[in-house]
Length: 403
Image 1 (cartoon, helix red, strand yellow):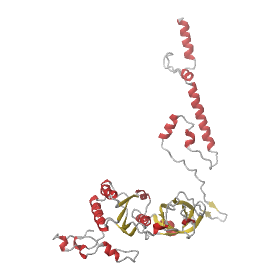
Image 2 (tube, one colour):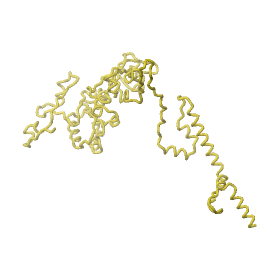
Image 3 (cartoon, helix red, strand yellow):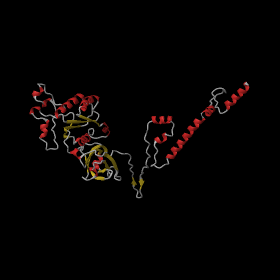
Image 4 (cartoon, one colour):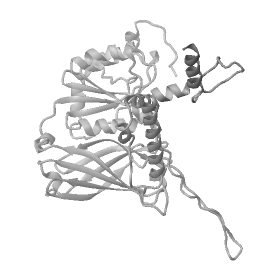
């Protein structure tokens, strides 16, 4: 019996085993045993891998209009494979390189050089906001490539669509940054439709802007981008909102706040101007990175009291414009709140509106002198102890003006 058992063990070991070393009883790997016990799982894995390879090969020969997302393959993979795919970083598929034009030697002996444009240097338009400015007027605020506007002739077309009608008018673009733009410049597009057009229908609709480069980037191309800038639900506006008495007497539109601001200085500035402007006032501040936690503690009580609205505009730092895109911000504030107030103020948080308390004048009495005007420019005066009266300085020694 022992001899027969040993003989069977010998035959079993010789059937598909991989033997290593000089000793017959050591280093034996039972590959055949693994294959017989896991044959179904291994066969399934091999078949699945083969199918995926075939599918990847076929996709290379399909037309460019055919697309297959990664989610389409997820349902075909086991849960373990899906977890591995989700944990791996998703990278955009590499674009298929277009064939480059090469230099050519012409029959007359001239070497014709080639030029191959690649990529995009700047965006044609960066949309921020759009507001209705009247029964048939809209304002669209954004950034655009400054070289395109300085050296090219881009055009804009406005189109208002309802369920039953469509109206199209040319858009009038202005650049209100006084030439201070950098890579990007501020652009305000005015869309004025006829009084009986689709834009005057209170049933709701959509405002689209078509931005055309007009060959500004490439004279052989006339690229037009379509932007849906405003969607109005039915009865979302009323003509009376443009003529009704405003909610506030004074509204402050601030320049972008950035850098390491002093919470104490911000507290003093807010308290001073809230008292100066009075209860029927509101302040709009744009945060470009300057509202850190300590400054937020100062602003939060004013927000809760309804005196302050805070806008986070840190994302605009991606686009290289003048002074944290200051002209973009103040134009957004102008068109957003123009019907909320009688007067709007534009100045920085290191500047103070000053009315001499001994003149028996208030801000209201001063402003009343200019009721027939649409704009007032306030002269600026640098602050230093030399500008203060002796009775106000309380005998304090005079200092040199700060630079």
